[in-house]
Length: 501
Image 1 (spheres, rainbow, N blue to C red):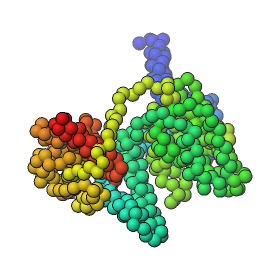
Image 2: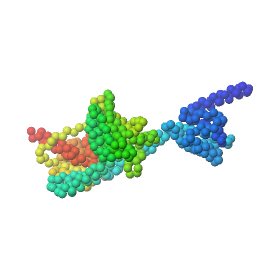
Image 3: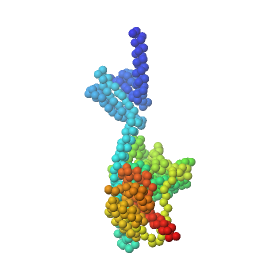
Image 4: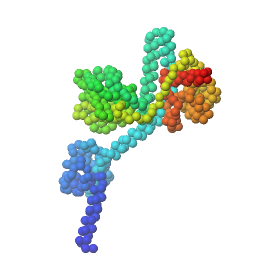
């Protein structure tokens, strides 16, 4: 082969090598022991371009220079690759220093920003999966006994209020009711976080002024110690949300804003709530004039369990739960860029601009005849809950069965006006009873309401998604339970009038 042909082959090989290097995501530097550049191929705009023969290390920013020089020396000394990571202009880089026998070190730098983001998301996903399993079990194991704790407390308070008793005793019981309610709310928050949107109420037209007012009143104690509150949300159109849960979101943002402010008294700082609207959306901003949120914190601020608060002052769940709630409403919760302080924006769909999301099940209750009493069957393996419901519904004839294997014959007897059945029980589940009644006694199924302390099994979750019969969450809302019972009595009265006429 001629010399010219060899040179052409070398040129072609060099061109192919350059094409390969251009396709790589890595930037490559080759240096000698002093850090002098021998060769380079730079693909990242954030990295220095250095001429061959120049000192590469001197071109590295001050905060990384000594670490790079030490890594080069360590690679030469040990003959092993040295790995480091660093950040620059909001990007994340992985760098390796690999020694060669020829007396050089190859420095390979890769932009791993997207990979790190995916890794963080994977960690969050795995944590959420574990939390989902835990929360489902916690919900079931706590909500069952909590049901009869709350039912018995409500019964005791009602009886004592009617009979007259020392006010301090009543106050103690009311505090116990409030404490049990907090336990219920904590479990509900865990379920919202672990199951995504499943436990968030359906959105409906909501007065945002009323929501802000409620949240501000609740947060008043925390705010008054830290800042003055400015509220400018008058005239906002209604948005699609659920008022109690949106109050929870705004309350969390207000408390976070107050706690982010440095000491100085209320006159030193301000928290501002303002809003706006366009043709399809309405939004509320919660702003503070505090120190702001660093970029590395802003990247993770909505992650579950991530918090910058001292141990014992924050769980890291508030913003994650808030974002889950807002997204269920079809909205967004975002951290808006600000030169000073921080601003969180809750952006929701305008009520009149939103397309209907499908029919929601509604239950119409007809008042039963005055003084009507019902035969009620309670099927639940929690003995304490059965006793509590017997007390709470003592104006009715209540029979309790704590072994579901004995329940089906009693239901099929047709002796009951109203049947309240737990979903998850040993031996025979509420789902088994439901499926039997669908085939053999649909009339009895029409009088049946199910209840659950947390559907922690796949079958239970599938049942709740397909079921057309009511299912109440534990701890039971006694008023809602009575409304279902009254409907059953009203239906009995309607059937009776048909036959008597």
